[in-house]
Amino acid sequence: MPVMPPRCPVPAEQQPINEYQNMRESWFYSWGGRDLGRYIKPIVVVWVLSWIVSGPVTAASFAPAKQPAAFLLCAASGALVMPVLMLVQLYTGWAHVGGRLRQKAVPYEESGWYDGQIWVKPDDVVSRDRLLVDYQVAPILRRIRRTFGILAGLLALSLITWQFI
Image (cartoon, rainbow, N blue to C red):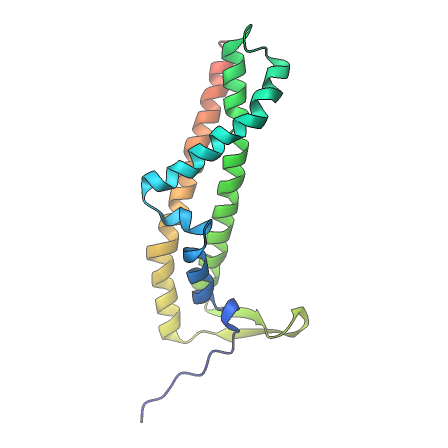
């Protein structure tokens, strides 16, 4: 007679595999796993929309007609704030789910904050979850870190360019 693994006591919405599935299916978080063009598009769209705020704020300091280079450089840099915040949220969410998938023991609450429990995953669940982290979550986190690197490089370039304006 085969031995059946114990039933998972973790509520469905707190099970790491279900958290991962919800992330993959969500409107916002699924964006991290899209193909490159569909990943970059929201960053660019949010950056362009951020000009609605950064443009007028920068124009108060640098008149576009008199100091076009300073205006463009500062407004473009200021417009990066929203995409960076968006990427921070994206990274934080995926890192959280990746961390829960990677853990061998999962903390959970049955009905509220006062009754915390810990469930030790069976070996087959640990293996499945680690594969998900290695082949699904980790590439998304690497992509977001690379995007942060590119944005940091653009900001550094704007600071260097600022020295020559």
